Image (tube, rainbow, N blue to C red; front, side, top):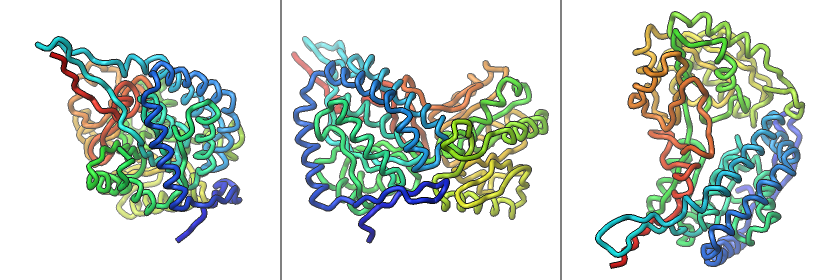
Length: 453
């Protein structure tokens, strides 16, 4: 079994750094330190916890170019998008700095008692298992509300962004959070399972694949521990005949191509009414042809490599299998190592991999439907339930169909995206629980019923 992690730049395939996995003794030290810190951190006034978020925001913005470059080198994110990711993290800090105290305030309930209320008490040490595609955002959208609520956090990040993981730990320390409040560990799957089994870990938050989610849920369930799972997505983008393509085509393309197409909430299945279908396909192609492709460290680059070569190979396999079943490549479908060309696949049917599986890269599956009713039914033909978007001028009709969409998000004339002010999460194979907003900060607290006669 490997005892080290070596990170590699996916653009030039050059190794970056080698790190040693933690020993069992190191993991025990981290776990006990996190538990000890929790016992004092939970007693710290919420106002004081929130004050640290102001410093966290300032340091994020001060270091945003360095962090963006690190992300670019470790997982190939276009550097301008890396800067935007850090700026979004700063916004997250601001949101919980302003609202954390109110969110965690006792909730008074009128009963026959002299006083009755809900007290929101932190649970303890929370383990987070995070992916590589948004190395800072995914971690901080878990950590900031969780720590602000009075918990302590341990991060097991994706191995290919180990540098980012260690920088995030350093960030919390440099801001002045207590030692053990946020800690990064370098661990293998077996060590992670051992941690979840430990009584000092009170809950688990995972953002990752459906396969990983099922495994973590099984272990957490066996130990009667809460978990929040944000898993894969296969978001539908419904484009109806009355959609204003000239206004929305840039949004639609961004919904698929941002982060090199590696986003759980990306639009992956474009379900288009036949009256606008040909125009849509042409406009979509015209836009992706214009995307700047190249070195992710170039500020003008919009599309670059995927995070690893095997990910590009998997995407290529999904397209090939779909072609065997009758799909047609209208544009793209060239791969070189970790680079995968933005691709349009048409003549797509529900049994094809590009329809029923999550395609984690810049491949757009475009499906023609006869009418609006068929479009909504087609959108629901997925085991995933992270988000859905519809583009139409008839917004009243779209709002009337909210209950038809089983997903965790329904966006009208906008791409699905996370926002600190709104709860984020999915249904079905996309997981359960919510991050962000008030719901996110209350995921890892004990909602305690207090009754005074």
